[in-house]
Length: 278
Image (tube, rainbow, N blue to C red; front, side):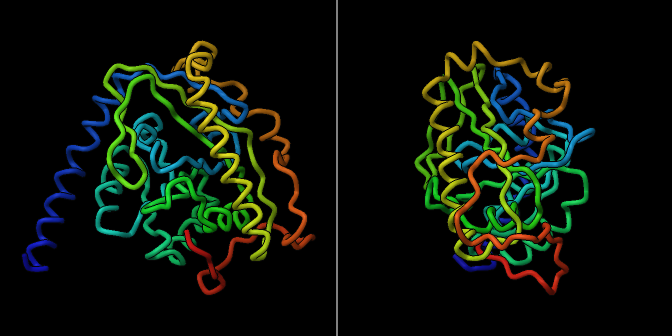
């Protein structure tokens, strides 16, 4: 098969998925009975609060473009051709795709992400995407959190019934009409201006935090479902954020090395950014 034919076929596929995908998600995710819980739960709309960075593993991302539809979340999506499908679906549900990954467009994506920090919108990043390894946190997400100064919200979703695809991440698709639980881990403040050692230290900490909330959501699914709040109540949270969020407090201990004190978060210009892998 010629490269021209493959390119055309990919364009047609991306167009079809981009048109059909948002409607399929509306049908599937709209049928779920979801409960929301967790120490880091914040009201979905960023109005009246600081914007934040949601982190979840690539395996669990399917529902969120629909549950938070129309909120113009800035989503980091692979610059690879397959990422075009997801970008079209995400944008079809009222979000903005920022293209880049660990392999392609990382520095450009970092510039675009940082340029959006003052937009008033939240961010969504799958820190092990787009091709893994599964559940391994990439340093680029730590870099963005450190440079932006925004709060990080480790997020997980689990379902009572679901399928796992034979992909690198074991991508999870919920069964229609099943129950789901979204849990938000304790809010994390990454120190500003981390050097290489600091990025690695906080990469390990954030990876552990995201794994912990994911595993807890799986293991305590039934209890969390019973104690969680319904979607309508989640969208009407008042106040819109927990006290730790408003206080700009750290929920993980300060790293012992790699953090240069006395520096405020940066919003570098295009020529100043040297980013690690996103």
